[in-house]
Length: 219
Image 1 (cartoon, rainbow, N blue to C red):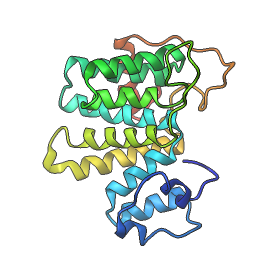
Image 2: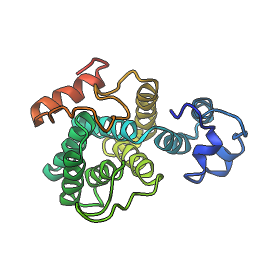
Image 3: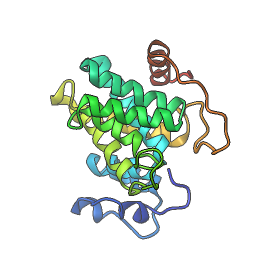
């Protein structure tokens, strides 16, 4: 999570529920507030907090892992899986090309679909929203986190919807691991502008890497 921000700073990017707001104190850290929200059963607020507290690259990676896990339980349509894989490629090999490819795949999947939202989240992680060659227009800083939080929620209700709260708890635990650095991609976070960009993996290799991360291993 953000090392220097308070939970109150993060919560300015979204609206807490009234019961969750009652738990917020001026100096509480994001990790401590996240734990307090979980203990009180405020799962939606915990999800939003984590999605906005994580740096964009980690937030998209968390959402990608959640949707990949959901896909193993309730297979996505082909276009949505393409968007999932495109977001995964950006996470593992961030570049302008993979970022814009995630946007294109998300648009093809449909912006109302979970895969479509994930592709757009990757695109809005940073960089210009304008077409190449036009003046840069940067996204609002809350947009990527908001979309990642939506993906995590939608992933939790895609299979066994009656047990979605347990699925969401599992995904919040996964997000906590990402925040701790336990399940990070091999790409530095953030990626320096002058860093060499690794080759984007193919579909089969990417699926294996995602499965390895979910199993607690390293790709």
